[in-house]
Amino acid sequence: MKDIGESFKEKREEIGITLEEVSKDLGIKEVWLENLEEGNAKVFKDIFEIKDTIESYSKYLGLDTEKIMDEYNDYLFENLALTLQMKLAAEAYYPDFTRRNYINAYEYNLGVCRQCMLIEIGAQTNTYQEAVNAAEPLAVLIDKVMRRE
Image (cartoon, rainbow, N blue to C red; front, side):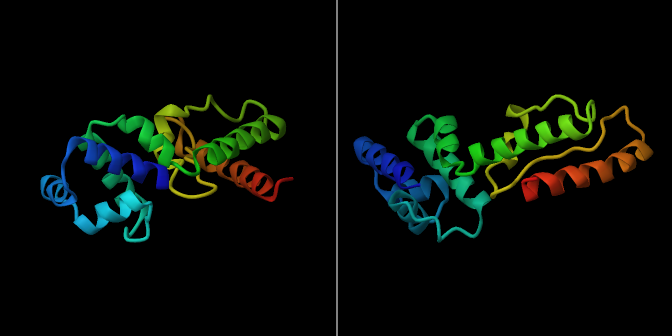
């Protein structure tokens, strides 16, 4: 977070604009921008507010928003590893139980918190009963992976 804040401050000063100007242009509280530049995320009420602010500010400054958002995502690699562990456990205990993992399309939830995954039961072609039947093996898999069995 500190590195992101420093890059924002450097770019803003290079452009020659004040925090007050940025605040007015983006409609973001000046104190939030100041804290963001200092690497302090505690003024934000939740991760979504932080991410929105980072995204808006980086676009405003003309920085590589995608790269900055990836840098901010503290839990991305940890949660990708957890997702892989779930996939491997599923293949070991219930062969052919899972489909292909789509990582990039669903990356939005991987930075919310530790041990965060998007799990979908079934697909558009599954019946309700098939989804219900999948719930128990899924619960077993989650339990095994979280207990690191």
